[in-house]
Amino acid sequence: LKICCLVKEVPDAAVTKRIDPNTKRLDRSGEKNLNPFDTHGIEAAMQIREGGNADVDEIVAVTMGPESAVRALHKAVALGADRSLHLTDTALEGSDVCATGYALAKALETEQPDLVLLGQQSDDGECYTIGAVVADHLKMPSLTQVIKIDVEDGRLICERQAEYGYDTVEVELPAVISVGDAINEPRYPSLKAIMGAKKKPLDTKAIGDLGIEASQVGEQGSKTQVLEINPPPQKEAGEIIEDEDTNETVEKVVAWLEERKLL
Amino acid sequence: MAGILVYALHDDEGNFNKNSLGAISEAAKLAGELGSEAAAVVVGDVSDDAAASLGSYGAKRVFRAKSAPEGLAQPIVDVMAKVIGDEGFDYALFGGGLLGFEIGAGLTARLNAGVTMEVTAVKAADGKLVAERPVLQDSAVVDVGYVDQPGIIIGRLNAFDAQESGDGSADVVDVDAELSEWSTKAKMRQRGEQRGEDVNIEDADILVGGGRGLGEAGNFKLAEELAESLGGAVAATRAVVDAGWYPYAAQIGQTGKTVAPKLYLAAGISGAIQHKVGMQNSENILAINKDPNAPIFEFADLGIVGDLHKILPKLTEAVKARRG
Image (tube, rainbow over all chains, first blue to last red):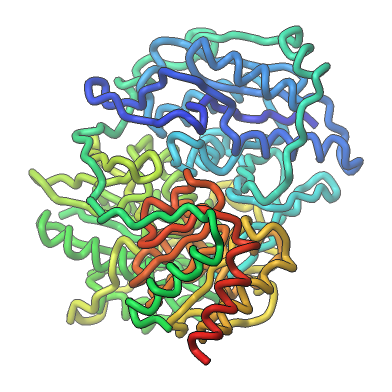
C-alpha cells in the first residue's frame, strides 16, 4: 500500500491572520507551521502501517506551496512520512479551491497512491473541500470528516458523523479520505526523527514537470474572485472577568444571571 | 431560462432536511431577482407527493434520480452534473451540512467550476450571484464573485431560512443518471446511527454546553449538576461526542442540533465555527474557558477566564442557594 498525505503550510496559530487588501489574498508573512489538521492524517497513515491489517510500503507527504513550505514537509516527515513531494511554482500563486484541487490531483497522479489522507480543513482557508475535489479528479471514491478507519480485506471501513447520526461506510481502494481531528491523537516526533527529517528524499516539482497547464492554475485558472473585503458585523463586546477569587467571580455571575431574570 | 439547482437531502423516513428547504427558499428568492427559476434534485426513494411538495418552498421543478442512493456524495455529484449539463443551470446551491460540502466539492472538479463555502448570504447583482463568506474565524467577510458559470455555493448551517412561498406543487421530472464507476465504490453499511441515549435539548430554556475543556467524560457530572440547579439541560460539542463522552442527541452544531435558548452556558468550549453556528442565536451566552484567546469570548455576553473545575461546583451551589 502506498499512502500519500496531503499537507499544507499555514500561518502559525499564534499569528493574527489578515487579508492583504491589495492582493486580496491571505497575508502569509510571519511564523508558519504545518496545518494541525493534517497531522491527524499523517497519524492515521502511521496507525494503518502499524495496525497490521495492511502492508504499507511507503508514506509520502505531498504539498503545494511556496519555498517555505519545505518546513511543513520536514515536519510531516518527522511525524512519520518516508519522503515528500513539493509542488511549487509562481504560476500557482492565487489558486482558488478549483485550481488547487486540480494541481494537487496532478501531483498525486504521478505517485499513483492507493490511499490519500488529509485533514478535514486547513487552519487558514477553512474550506473543508479539497479532499472531495481531488478525489473526483482522480476518479476515486471519497469521504470527508472520517473519525475511524479500519482496514478489512483490502478495503476501508470508515465512520463519520453526518446529518442524521453516525454513518459506517465501506470504501474500496484507491480512495481519498479526509479525517476529523477526533480520529486520533497525533504523536510527538522524536528528536531523532526531527533531526533526520531533512535527510529524507524530497522531490521538488514545477507545474511543467507534472503536465499542469498554466491556464488552469493561479489567478488565471481560478473560477472565483474576491471582490471585496469587509469587517464582520459588529457585535457589542461582552464583559470578560478573569477568575482570581472564585467566590467573587461566582457572585458576579449570579448577579449577571439575576439581572437577566435567568434564575 | 436557466436557474439555480438545489440538492434536497432527506432522512430514511423521507423527511427533508431543514437546511435544504432553506436553500430552496433562498434559490427561489434569488432566481426571482435574476429572472430565472429554482429547481431541486432528490435521489433515492422519494414519492411523487414528497418531491412535488418542494414546490411550496419555491422549486418549480424537482429532478428525481430514483436509482441513485441517498446519503453519499459522489452518486449525487453524477446526478447533479448531468442535470446542470442537460438543463443549463447557472448555479448550484447547498444548505449547510456535511453532504452539501462534499457534493459541491465534487461538482467543482467535475464541472471545473468556482466554489464558495460557509456562505452566510447571497446577493444578485448585474444578473450574477455574489456570495458573502466570513473568513479567518469570522474576523473578516469577503464578497466572492464567479468568473463564469456554473458557480457552486455552499451555505453555512442555518444561513438560509425555510419559507413556504405559497407556490403550488413542483413538476417532478425523473432523470436517469448513469453513476460513475468510482461513485459506486463507497457503500453505506449503516446510516444515521444514534450513539448514546436520546436526550432533548431543543426545548430547554437553559443549556449548559460541555466541551473538551471538561477534561474527561466523568466531568460532565459538573455540567449536569449545574444544569439541574438552573432547571436546564446539558448539551455538548462534536469533539466530546466523537470521543464518546456524551450522547450524539445532545450535540450542537454543523452535524448536530441548532438551539437558541434564553441562556447558553458554555463550559470548556473553544467556540469553533462549527459549534458557533448551532448556538449563536442564544439570547444570553456565558462562557467559561481557561484560554483567554478562545474564540468563544469574541461572541459571549459574559466571559469568565478561569478553571471550570473550580468555578462550576461553586456556581452550582450559589444557584441552588439563590433558587432555594
